[in-house]
Length: 202
Image (cartoon, rainbow, N blue to C red; front, side, top):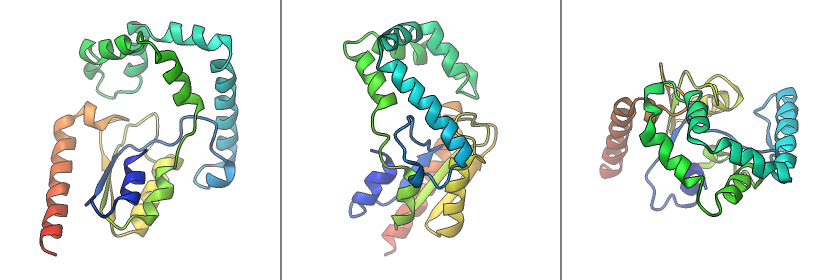
């Protein structure tokens, strides 16, 4: 479950929630009446793409696709397009992923992630949270753009709710904590200290 979903259920033991470039569902299982934040045309295109992917993954072609994607070179190429700081895409990052892809059950996990239930959308949970929420978002995210449907939805929530803070991080991408750990850790630690001080003063 997402951190926002956990926070919604356990506000008695959780003081705050931090989200980093929070993405939406990764498959076609999201119903249109739940997706008011997404342009209907884009939504239908995405549904078609993911539905087609479902068919491929659940057919004999699925195994062929997985076998051709799980090599270290392919994984590195994919990550190069995700990371803004491509120097972070090194053997320390790529090899564990490639090794895990060789494990028993790896293919089944791959299919389950892309065809299973997407779970509760975080932007649907946030409005019900009363605890402090910090959202850090890399401005150069090309996977879930900061001013795209999902990023815009989170910014709107931050504008409407005093307990939610949305922070744009320049020059960082979809994985800001990996692109620049020092910058992200500094912002997180500062925010956590503020939350702690407010809790201690109650």
